[in-house]
Image 1: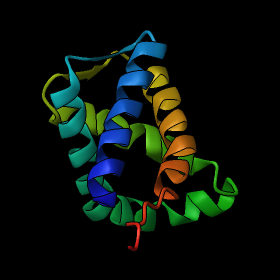
Image 2 (image 1 turned 180 degrees about the vertical axis):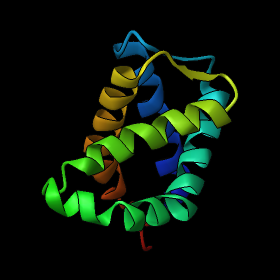
Image 3 (image 1 turned 30 degrees about the vertical axis):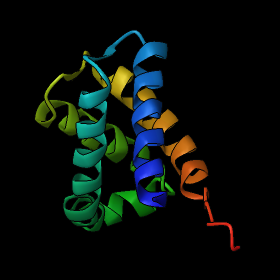
Image 4 (image 1 turned 180 degrees about the horizontal axis):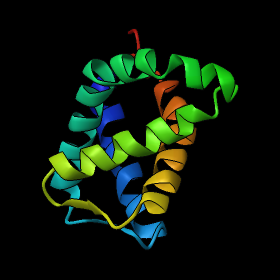
Length: 116
């Protein structure tokens, strides 16, 4: 139940980001659900490889290059997921920044069943 709730909240967050930022558009809630799924797959399979390859530049920039990686992976998700588009790099950058700020807050949600 927790995972489904987090998935829905992340989809609502994606829709809010698309509503706030002018360069990001999403066609509906189902597209937002698909975007969350694609983001999870990209973060699982592609992000570790990209971070490993970019480790030297990440060390030189004291981790700030991770923001660029987040933006580029967010743009990649927009190319893969149907009904989701990002107009430019800066829209993707700020969208990924907002997403990376609020995702840990959503991850902390923990609903327990009432014991009777």
